Image (cartoon, rainbow, N blue to C red):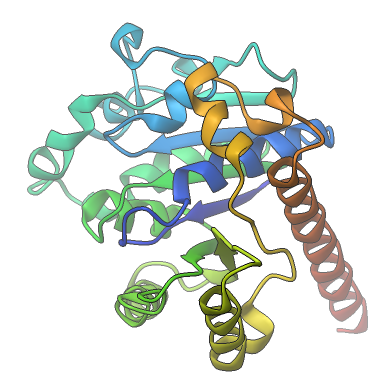
Length: 268
């Protein structure tokens, strides 16, 4: 069964969509069957892998509000053979209002995505920068969550609120939700502030922080304008290498976790 990972932070501008696109692309480049789910009405993940949101007929909106089968809206990307997309559309803005009176409204994305888990090794959800109903849906559907945190002064601002939301979802909606890791982004080795933020986050969260740190990188900023992940824009750039390292770190972590669970099962 594939692992569903949400990439979430209600704070904007932390490299969330960049991380979702490039992590998904890196996992696909490592030949893992990967589905990128765009759960942000801005649809930047959709355009970031080569699709024009204006041309999208059916999106995750139709899955959640109208109950359309998720398999019917999945698009095969032209950028990488192992990477598929569940697109978004500006209509998703209205989904929170339309879903307000639906029964089990927090589980609509879970109903759509969980049946797909057998078809993929990894499903990566790009969440919107809010803690609204769509993000709650993503966290209810996910097995784990990656929290991108930028290496800047306000790095920890709002992080407590997000972690509190995760605890509430764990207790009420999704007991198996775990924190996959905190991902430090926009790191500038030249700035003392960046190094201070890294130290502070590692001091507070210790084992939860990924070893991989994503640097500020021009190629990472350029690649969305071409509608391709950075690995196809410049495979030797620091940004590309960092996301490949992150993908390997996640794969290794999940193999170790799977092995431990199997050993515990045998012992029982």
